[in-house]
Length: 552
Picture 1 (cartoon, rainbow, N blue to C red):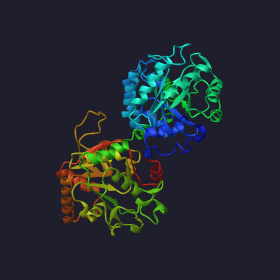
Picture 2: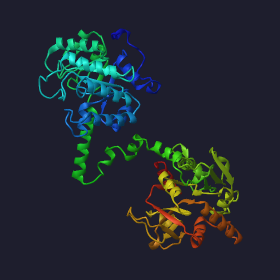
Picture 3: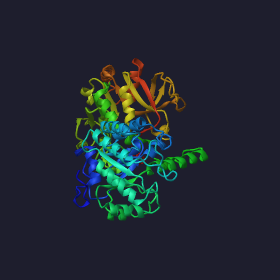
């Protein structure tokens, strides 16, 4: 076997992307590079993801914290199969290599070789086993713990190396001689024996509050193989000392779980004491952050690929008017005002695209040349000053073919609202906000009366239908406000075209608004209502515009 030479170690940075090499090779490179490398503890899939996100290039799957996360003691109370299951979550969640704290190997040589095979099958890049007896006791508990016979432990190392399924799998031998009070000479003797047995690196452990004996061991070891340390007790030693001593890798062994316990205790006590979440929400990760960490977006994209859905193949956006935003709309229509680096219309188009609606027709009018968004079809309503919304919709009549979504060009809404409409089995469905805002009585014209009010009972699945929409409704009878978003099935689109044709024949097409259209439809066909509680914005005023810049 070729012994490790710190002076001729690979100088390639371990920051090279793991995707370009196996995780096994990536861990080996971390250990063998001349630069000091670092592993941070993780104990489940989510904490492993946080470690990778923080920029660490490797993970220490700690036996202590894997057990403690199950509320079990670090005495092999967690079975190796339970540990293996957790490791599978961790490797699935990350792309960086994981070094398992494999305790004593969960038994004799036979247990070790089975463990190594299973780790390789799950893409766990390496294992560290310690020279004590099974079941293990945590190194910081008690004194003078019994150690394994050197030859027997060398047999465990050989069995592990003979069983690896990848040539770059790493087996680290952990020397407990200093912990157990056997002194420096015994620690060096054991380390040398383990190296000859096939260990890829040596972990020298100490529970002293200073790094004196660790640095002395490193000096006498002389770089014969990569040297790994765990400075849990001698944490105050400057890292520069370890670099100077040619230490290969530092393991920060249990700090993610300890930090989590502190944060959970503080949060639990505060909620208990205040009986409220007001003082908590700003201190903790958002639910959205959880969704991001577990990659909800990938699932949504996969659903669009693999699950047949009744998605609208067309969308029509009515954006012909200037809007009343003063000088801001002097040279552009309201749909093109800036919302944190994107126009209002671009944000709307992006929301449609995220829900799989990519065939989008925009009806333009005022300053139509300022509408410069790619991926849309533009139609013109040059009579925008003298005609109403229905006429603009009629200008895009050719796009009303099959499932269709119709939206105002000055609204923003959360993606889930559109998804709900697309998933609805109704032929005509309108999004209605059941929270009547203070502005409603004065400004809103799209007030809605339905056959039943909003129900907060999540088990209530009874359908709701439109009775009337308009600005002249009795405030005491109003159930909500239309959000400027409607969805039509193929059948619903046929009803829509037929109604526009009828209104054109009656001479109503040019001046009618959409509430008039929906009122007529509701007398002939079921117009379904989907209630929501906020999560949208109608940009009518400068105050609305300011709010839109904080809308996400």
